[in-house]
Length: 464
Image (cartoon, rainbow, N blue to C red):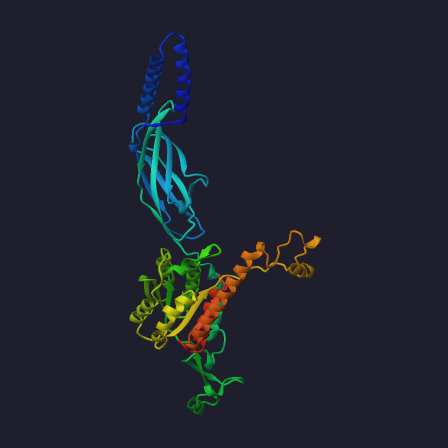
């Protein structure tokens, strides 16, 4: 049995009645027992008059997947299987990060169902994080005729909405596909530098590379003939996501892992359109996810669905194990794109010693995201800076931060830490470049297109 606010008001009225009975000659205990007995009887009778929640049958339907930032629509069908009219409330509880609402306001609905009727309740689900967002319970509360008490029951109606990555870098795909078509010779004349696979013969035009002249075909034809080339197809691209502790660092509103996932999806979409096979490996202390090679229209949905539930692990990444996992899965030469963080201690102790075994068999790109440079603050006037050394504060300088003073000490230390981090990343990038690894480091807004451009550059140069 559940009580409502009306029951509390009735109890407050009963307290006043107790006082009147005591004033009329009854003892306090007699008055209290009499009023409580009447109150309890009224509440019990009202609860008995409420329709049982077991007479409602519940079922769900609707969306199973939604992109992060979008809204999924889930319907909850409620059927009154009893013989009496059902009046009361319904609460549909989900995981907090699902942000599920009924009518866009709350997670509660008022029900008034005649016997045998069915009502569909629309639940809008707008998750704030990737992954599976399950339901909790549906709580049904029916009230008696007086609205003082009622019956309540919680029912599990299983449903889950998988939140997929938003793939915000999709806007860069058309321009990269146009470049790919140019390389493939569909919108521009293919030349020797754009690939190593023979495409066709055509007549020589001024500006063609003389090394592309096919002398045998020229001898048989009436004009000079040149060979055209196209980018290689059916090559292997292996994307490796580091899901260790450094991937959990937040840059703005996203984690490093989310930003690198977005870059990986753009690369996968581009490579799939180019006819290459794409693999995905997510690794920290162990392999968390593996999506085997594929291409074509089914590639991106498979990747997105697998990545949706991938979360950072607060452990140190085993880079030697990561390299071993790649080498054991990919036998033929491939382009390996490592989505990692250029953290100097981790790189020097883990990845750099293990890289020679990888670079000996594969072409390697290291992609890393860095924080955007902070917005520079305006420098104080020259006379203010000169007055700092003398300790004299000019009247017009009052209220300005003192450079080098205690008020600005935190900013000085922060700037020094950023400068040190930049130097460490530059050092790691230099070491990787000497090992024959191409390093792509950019801000969150630029990392996805730069990784795609690096892939296209290598494909144009015939290095895949």
